[in-house]
Length: 162
Length: 331
Image (tube, rainbow over all chains, first blue to last red):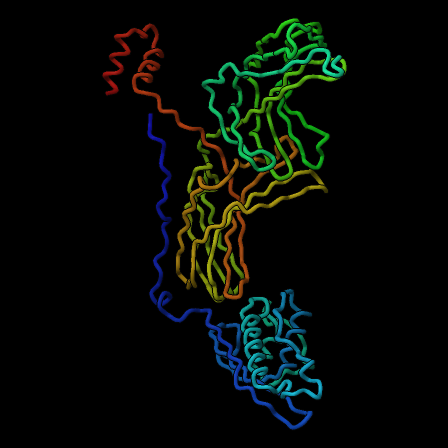
């Protein structure tokens, strides 16, 4: 005798949002810049370093702002540490460019400006991808890479939180 | 004998007695096509006629018996040879002998039990059919007529909501809520996601409906997952304290009722999968089972029809004056 019932699709009740939460700074602020490439040394002992600056409000990082200089092999070290110790799939680094290190090239090889810029972009993408990963944030090696003066290759690997 | 076109053969045809009035329902075949079949429910009688039409008029058809069967069976695709019949009824229509003319045979399977719903899946099929057979020495003549069975339910007495807090410690805490745990197939999922802690950069959030078909038992259990629906519920980065509403209409999707351990052979279960995707395409998800059931269609009888039925309930009151009175009352 009754009309087919129409489902009640009204929204469920929810708590009103606190205005400081709504308009305050978000809790997920994390920005890492890789910039200012500098080539140090002479002749065959040259290498390029990059400034890695991190700004964050994530409580897991001891420093809310940090600035360190790193070279490509430091990034490689970090990638290897993470691949060994954590269960995550580590994103790729920009290429090693071994060909560019061979002699008798017409250009500056790995010190070519365009190449350094390409590499800088790739390193920035890599570090931002990895630093935002909840599991990578547990690894000592990541914190050391981002926030300590130098990466101690003799460190004791471990977790930052349980 | 029917070598080289000699001898006699016949065409078999099954016609239901309520073929004109009975509703048909759409059902998917194994190769994905949709066909319409007569719809039956548990307990309904299956009756009709088997028409035997002789192909060569004048010649006699020798046979070892004519029968009709009503079969409900489960077929596992990886084990095609073995059909598991859970309903098997036979009616003999003719004893071994001869047919000199085309003939019709009536049959009735009264109040047949049809305990399960018809289902065509990825690895298993459950079907009901009528099969007429003329047994002969060398080769039988058979004709099958497939029917579709739906299992109906009424609103469950207990239908609690699903509410849970989940997350990754110190990274992401959410509370999700769905208004029911049992939904009928044309229902609406109403819910919400409340963010308690957001320390990752979320890009968007979606809710998926996943169908899991499980076949086999013990060590050889096989799950086939199929994402039936993907429905984005949030685009952008939420912060703490935000509530995201969910309203997902089920009628638009190809669903079946939840089937648990049908004849101990297979299950079909449904899950809501809440998926959050962050800026780096990392996926965070929480799966939750829901129960789907089939609601019967409400038939709205006309007022006069209802009045007539109502008046018939009372002893000796099925008089025209009484039904006219009832009509007036209901106006």
